Amino acid sequence: MMYELVKGALDLHVHPGPDVQMRKVTDLELSHRMTQKGMGGFAIKSHYLCTAERAKEVNAMNPKCRAIGAITLNNSVGGLNPVAAEIAARAGAKIIWLPSVDSRYEREFLFESRGESRIFPYWVQILKDLEESGISCPPISLLTEAGGLRQEMYSILEIAKAYQLCIATSHISHEEAFAVAEAAHEMRFERLLISHVLYPSTCYDLEERKRFLRLGALLEYSYSTFTTKKTTFEATLMGIREIGPQNCIISSDLGMPNGDSPEEGLYRFSRMLFENGIPEAEIHRMNRHNPAFLTSEEK
Figure 1 (spheres, rainbow, N blue to C red):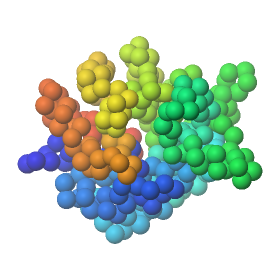
Figure 2: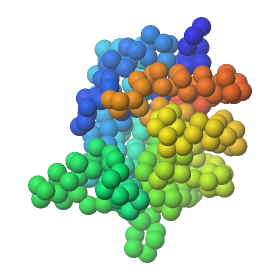
Figure 3: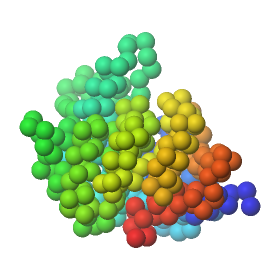
Figure 4: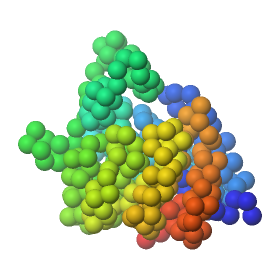
C-alpha cells in the first residue's frame, strides 16, 4: 500500500489555518486529507492563538482523524503565563510550545545574523506593525538575570506534568533549553520535546543532542528544515542514525502557502528515510509511537 509508511502517523508540528497569516490548508481540509491516507492525526500550531477549541471542532466533524490542540507561549497569550497554560490544558490542549516569535534568543539570532537584504519571516512585519501602533511586544527570556530558570517556567512544567502534556522547546536558546531539560529531569517530567534540532537557531551538535537524551527528552527532525535548505537531508539522516530512531520524532513543520501540504511532506520524509535504509518499524516509531506517547496516547 502506497501510504503504509504513514499509517496511523501523528504529525506534531503543523501550521494549518485559519491563522494570523495565510496558510496552505485549513484544519478540516487537512483532517480529511490525512484520513484518506490512513494517517492518525496532527497537532495544530499557531504562534499566536490557543488551538484547543479548533481541535475539538475538527474532531467532532471528522472523528477518524485526531486533531491535537496546543498553545505557544508568546506575548499574545501573556508569554510565560501559567494561567494560559492551565486554561489551555483544561480546554484539551496536549502540547505547550515555549516562545517562538517572541523568544529573545530567536529575535537576536535573526536580526544579528541577517542584513537588510535577507528575507525575513512574516512575523517580523507583524512585530513592526505592533511597534508602530504603540503596542508593546517585548522579547521573552526563560532565565532570570542570575541565569536561573524563571519561577513561571517551573509552574508551567508542573501544569504540564499534572495534565500529561508535552512541552516543546520551540525557538528558545540552547542555555534555556538545557535549563528546562534539567528541571524536567529533576521533577521526573517525561514528555519533553527538543524542537527541530537542525533548524539554524536551534541547531544542536551531536554531544548536545546526546545530553538531551540523558535528560530524558525526545528530539524532533522536521521535513521543512531540509526542504527549505536550512540543512540537508543527508545531515538529517545522519542525525537520526547517530542517536537512534527510538529517541526521535519526525514532523513536517509545514502549512506555509508556498510549501508542500503537511500530509504529503510527512509521507515524503518517511519514504526518503525508508529508501535510505531506515526500517519501516523504526519509521513508525518516529512518526506514530513516539508522537503518541508525547501526546498521552501511549506510555
